[in-house]
Length: 95
Image (cartoon, rainbow, N blue to C red; front, side, top):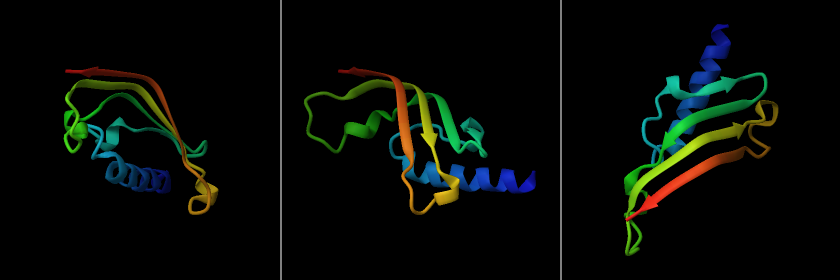
């Protein structure tokens, strides 16, 4: 059991490092993971309002929400296989 918790913590830190520029509030307790199934889910994810700031668009992000982010992580081939990311119901309000 301790090994599962440790591996989930490592996965959460990697995902946090990769996604924290785009998504708000990525604390480890928000990750729903099935280690044996190789899936990690995040529900009701807020997109950072600053995500478009580096572009010279004539609009800005007022609100961004992703209902569900699902990731399939092939733990057996972690370095040589793709990670699949699925987004469900992305809501964006631009101003």
